[in-house]
Image (cartoon, rainbow, N blue to C red; front, side, top):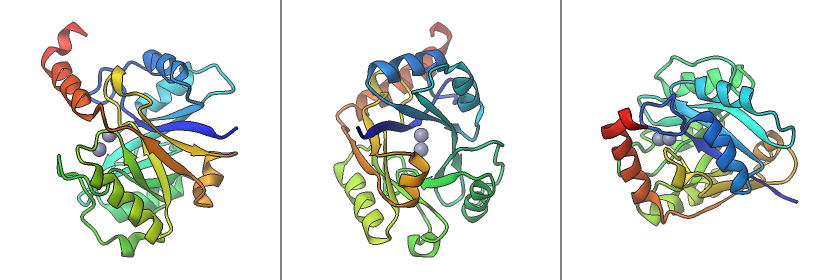
Length: 215
Ligand SMILES: [Zn+2]
Ligand SMILES: [Zn+2]
């Protein structure tokens, strides 16, 4: 049976997400996922807490982070330490040094403008994959471009919800056989999902930011 992982989830350790680690685990299992990566903004804390909470050997929690650099946002997976650098090339090196793998988050997104602003051709040997499906994309062509670029540069494809709220979790995922690391290294992953909830997700974030006190 192929496995399904949602590889981009924000927890309350990101200031714009309402998802508590306990809730993330519960929802991910309810929605049929075999694993997740918790990828908070510039922090591995949510991943560390969630992985400690997880007692299920058949469910994997990957400690990750979405690191904001001057050139784009990078997702780092299987991290052990915080990465403080803001330079894309340096961040890619630091992820590798820790034994992790890297994926450029939403490389062609235009709203908000958090796309890749660096020639992909020059980092294709350094980066492992592209987020070929991000559920928060407002326009389908953003994901289509990411998919095409991953094919062109022979990079792994990941799918993820980028969830910040309950409704979004598991709306997109990465499908693969065996171990995730191996599938990424061999470029044998697929990305699938829905963007139908992208606007609702953004509204939930706004609601959370305004009424944080009540959550
Ligand atoms: Zn992002
Ligand atoms: Zn994100």
